[in-house]
Image (cartoon, rainbow over all chains, first blue to last red; front, side):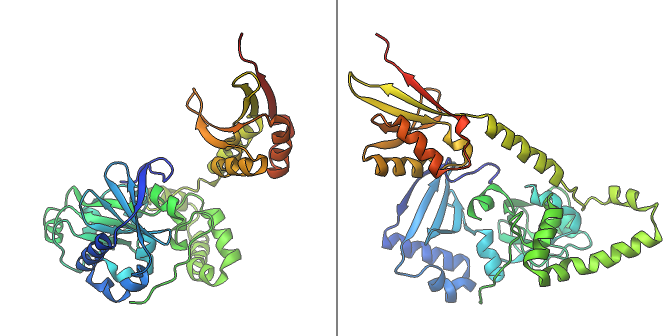
Length: 180
Length: 184
């Protein structure tokens, strides 16, 4: 998604959100990430306004205190940024790819099924199609990408061919570079 | 849920465990050794021993092995460095053009073009010029669709001095003063 992206060029504008809209967004995020509830007040204190940064191609970012925390494509789910995910690794369910896949994931490839089923890869939790996952790697402790499943984990095991998980946001992509 | 602090590499900006895939692993390694010895020992301490062991046992087989291992990434530091140098050379060749453009009979504006090549933030620079000269100053696109700073009033000489004082890394020879007279 972030093949080529920069905040100076691909931004249509930013607005401070109305508090009623903010409440809605908070609700949505809690609904999506129930584990976030106890710390959401630290993350987005009620008093500080949420700034909605609108980007081109239907991207939007939620930023609090000049830190981008979540982004969204169309009306889809809110994805946390990798920085946020590194801080709170329990935010998303994890899937793990084998070592051979790391290189390709880091250059933006989608995750193929064999990379999720081979030795060294792990899928411990059963997840439905379209679930947002954090992609871990064999032998590494931090997430290297955020993905969205294209098949359920069961199907991935059964079919074992083709794209299993879309690569939404990975280490060292242009969004990561913009934020660091 | 407790927030975790994650260390990021100062060279490639990723967590240090991913440095080996960054293409600048040599530099990353040096950076980590200098900045966080504990993490360095944890990540690289073991592998070095293993590598030594492997070297001792099977020297001939090693190159082939490396080729087959898809998970290894080539160190592109040299390439990147060459690129940087190229950019630097380009920088040295590029010019900052300060141009006086006449607007009406006695009024003119000064445009500065080419500052962005020297990593100057145009917007901030424009604001600074506006403050310094008590005049209007903004970043505008010229007719070639490149960004330039437009300062209202004739400040070409002062601008030259100011640029030299403010951004000492811009060589004086690279700044050109041009006067653009309105055609009659």
